[in-house]
Image (cartoon, rainbow, N blue to C red):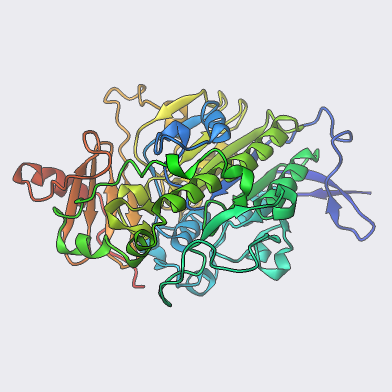
Length: 486
């Protein structure tokens, strides 16, 4: 028996099982037939800054699979997160609504309390006839089960994490400094295979299995890779390429980097984590753990990309890879996230579009784009690429013009008219990232200005220099003027 499912202009056939539920046909049954709309493989890597080979953030990082994906699509080197924390960033990406309009600014808020009726990306694609499935962390520690057609682990449990091996006795590397310390700030090599470890390995296995299934219905498939989110425990072999004695400190670290900051910047820079880590002589060991976790995450990405390459969907799938925010490892005397500095707002973003996609029939050629973009643009971009109707409440501009012309050469002025805005936890505090300049504005009025062209690590605050007053004013005008209450 066959079921004709009619959705907004996109009919899709699916075979029914004995209970009357549609299920995908096998690759053999669907051989020679492709969905009329492209599939979407949507990959999130948690807490990843620019320590990626193709972004040059750290000389010792090992990311061959991220690099090969970048070499086959458009690599955005000036991409920024909507917020420098998991919850507000992921909420903004998955809903298309900026924090300054939603009022969701921090990890302590709950998405469905703030936005009870917002439709997230998988639900929108499902409404338009796609099969929406996901695995791993995509929202902030919950799944939002009604928004998915399938999920691993079971969506009903609202826990996005499969079994993961951790040491029996913790902490392993960093003693607890007090109740202020996040319990997962810890790291170490595990004597375990990937299968024994579980975690992202199980996520990658499940995603690979989904990719092997032939379908007549297009799919939206989301893969949430948790590492390098803390704790940095991964199998021992991922530590081996990074001998502790050879670890390099972060290239962006500068001992006196706070001296030219305004009071609010000086307040937000130093934190107890970095001082505590240095006190216990664990700075290089922590960097080693972060590099090992990135290496592990990249290997899991490789499993997913290999599965796509050998699947029936290799030539009809849009691939998007992003991270929710960056991460400090001592820069500005800071550890973790939550700041508006570039090390925390700048993220990897790669988009690869196959030929024949409705929004971009020629697909993407390998390219590098340095124009400022924000992850808020992912939702409207994917809708346009797939030939689906736009949603009027989305805040970000579509990236389609840059995907078709990454250098902006089709514009006589060579201009992309947009900047990227990153919102901090307190309404009215934000960063504006342009092509050359970055402005950090704190709600109380303090400001910082950086020339990224000559100062990529933001070591020299130029906000007090009168000759740059016009630059500050121009960037201020591009920022929001009203902010939803928190």
